[in-house]
Image (cartoon, rainbow, N blue to C red; front, side, top):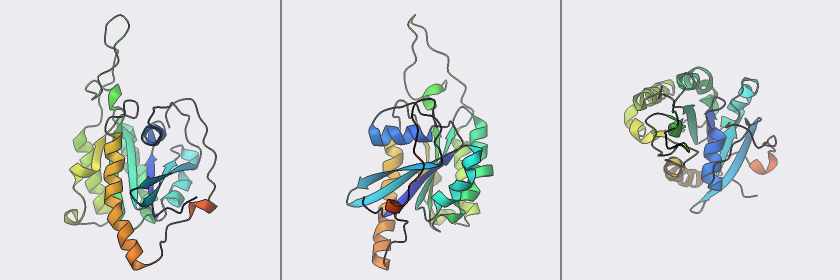
Length: 226
């Protein structure tokens, strides 16, 4: 297995759809899954670089593993459910502290998933067989809420807003089910981490953990979103 140049980690509460987002991008399909146990990863070749993307468990009993998976991460995707406000609150209360082990110039993306389930969802779907429109949930988290969290993260990391990517560039709304904005999310981050790889190569040997010697717990399939 090829050694990754950088690592990207998905964090967020259970059932926000982290695993489904990763499946949608890497496998080009939507797949219902049970909650991830521990962690799992994909290796993505982007241009001439190898990027490992780690999916982590949102369940409380696996929470302590998060800081281990974040160690040395170049980018972290903090994921919430746009129809469930508490999932955004949890990112700050439970998951932000896990990022202390990430690289000092780590990039952060704030991702609101499941827009297809909301009343103003971007995906046009959900018609019933009788011609009616299936019920959708109210959207509890607005884009400005994600922007506010992003700015809190910059302060937590003691980063100047002028030196960091703009909040509007790092906050996304997605649907793993329809694919809405999923490619945009991952490929925006890939493009952003390339200069980091180039700089690391110029400075010396990579400090990225070699995943060839790391065996994460086996991921189970079928069920509801992770």
